[in-house]
Amino acid sequence: MTRKKKMITEEEIIALLNLRPHPEEGGDFVETYRSEELLLPGTLPDRGRRCYGTAIYYLLTPDTFSAVHRLKSDEIFHFYLGDPVEMLQLWPDGSGKVLLLGTDMVVGMRPQVIVPRRVWQGARLRPGGSFALLGTTVSPGFEYEDYETGQRDSLVRTYPDFRDLIIALTKP
Figure 1 (cartoon, helix red, strand yellow):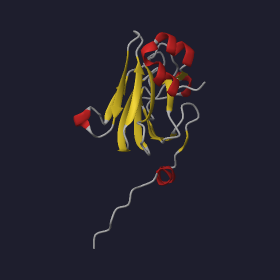
Figure 2 (figure 1 turned 30 degrees about the vertical axis):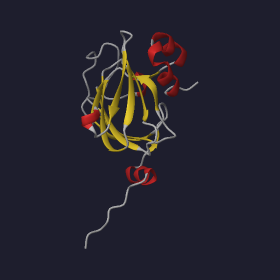
Figure 3 (figure 1 turned 135 degrees about the vertical axis):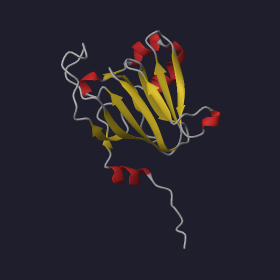
Figure 4 (figure 1 turned 60 degrees about the vertical axis):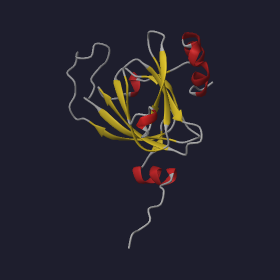
């Protein structure tokens, strides 16, 4: 007998993966990996000791978004399941782009997206989506002191072509 597979819900994902609200950017997350190895002191001129890398699960729902922020480390997003996610990236040279995370590669979605260090980023479900389960890996490893929240007015002045999405992905 074949068992019919039912669609998983966001509540089940939260419970199964033990996700909690992200204290800074929104969405729900859990850290799944933190390397034991540490970079030697002085390896990173603008930071103290850091582990080689970290990884998290990250869940977005229609009521949440990843607020615009930037890190001092590279971050790789991995799309696992659910509905497509649009990600805004704002580059130090004043340019920006919107990328789509998802499985429909024929229409330009990608299951993996790189965010280089010091690039502003924010993300949300595409309209009509129910949830998206993502993962991220950060190298050198994530520390909250390396996290900077984007300020709406400053970002809109610097990146006026992305005004509407900046407003949608920042807190007033």
